Length: 366
Image 1 (cartoon, rainbow, N blue to C red):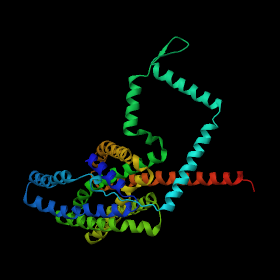
Image 2 (image 1 turned 90 degrees about the vertical axis):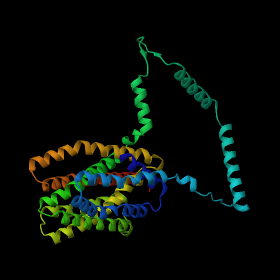
Image 3 (image 1 turned 45 degrees about the vertical axis):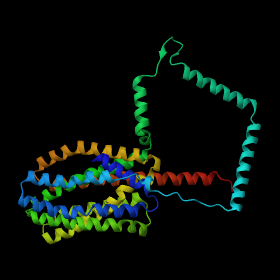
Image 4 (image 1 turned 135 degrees about the horizontal axis):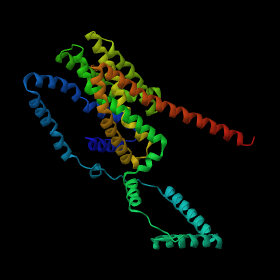
């Protein structure tokens, strides 16, 4: 599942650039239609079949994904080459520019002095000696050899592009996204149990989830337009959506009336849909296109680690508290961690940028 989600995200965000947020909203809305139909389907299956038979039927439905995957083709097979015509005037201008550039390069070569040539020859000799000598003897007579562990680690770093983690902003982004992924994944699993714990029937719980899903899909379509109106970057819009999600989720612990619960479901679904759109495009906004595959790979790896570590802890909390409401409240607190670390980092960057501008203005002569 992680491999499929990673490949899908890379493909979508690599192909679309200018209209990435709108396309992400449309696509997530389309595959979100299933969240409206499946609660009703599961309710019907549980009423007419055993749990095991219901799971087999659902598995068979999901098996159609294999057929759709086989039918996929690389987009390069269907791309058309467009010829760009350049008139004579533009062609002559380009020729002149290339000629000037070549002349400048020739002049720079002619101006090369003996010192530069000597430095170049010296660096070439050093490089040659380093390549030819696998063992280097130091003053104490000890031999230094590049260990197998270092070679393996270098290959791993290069293959998975782990150098991305050296960027503190990128690391902060994927940590925040993974924390929220863990919260959202477990919240969707726990909310039906919490509702039935509050004496709601299976049919009422299914209706709650359907209202939740309808609002979710609707705001997946509207989220890009909201971002355009507010004129904020994707990370800021994501933080806004998280704040709204936390507020709306908190009402679940206090609202008991079923009609009011449906309004809460609509609010949670709406803000969750807004959050989902921007979750998918926060990394493409920061990371370069050629490194998106590695960036999403690191993100989904961290997602798996968060689920692996946090899941049992959440289970222990449920066993101790004997209710699901406490789990929902804890998940809300965990979500605020993403809001906090991102806000601190963004404020720090703005303060640092302002100080740099002030120093630059002071250093410039009047």
